[in-house]
Length: 109
Length: 217
Image (cartoon, chains in turn cyan, blue):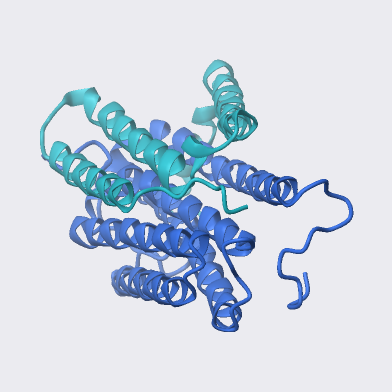
């Protein structure tokens, strides 16, 4: 057990500094008008932040290939959940279903 | 797992290393189902945000970006203190584990305190979905959906943090008693994974709820 990789303190502090920098960046970029680009940029920054948390804080970077595969599988399944749900919503015209209802009942609940 | 369990090899495993890897993988299996659990909420959010984009932008601009940013910093800070607690566990430094877990709990409590301030403010502005909901702007119906998702997603996230603080309260006396050594610290490591996961959920919630469509209007 003692052979587990002990990550140098400097790595944790550098990852933390990068996360802080990215937080400032995501708030800062929200004040810049990028048109439709604001959301993709915000999501890209969030994905980057999540990745370094997973790799360094959650030690996946130092773990076995099996753990890499395992962690990646979780996000692959999330992708299946979201992509297959959205392809249903955006090909069947379901997403507009409550509109008429909401127009008839402005405060339905 | 009894308190007397200090990492002795259980008979179904070949080695301590294998036993550790199995526990680690089990924790990841739990985290993966948590990803999918929150995934359903993010899916609902995506559908309604695309349908009622204007209401979501207006709702988002109604949230306090300062408090949201502050909480993001606090929660990422608590991830750092948790990572340092696990590092102390790897080195068998009991006092270090104890200190950093206390630090993580304090930061977690600050986050929840700010959340209480935000929820109270929404309550006073009649923005809790239900019979008392009042929105004078356009799209009151879609606005109610935005706030339903806001309270559902941040509430579920906050519940995970409350549970996390509860688990830390449970871990602390065991740390004090010196149960965790550099040969056996699996519960600390696995709790760290849980706490970092909760941090990651917030890393996505923050831009998706507070920064919709930018803040440049």
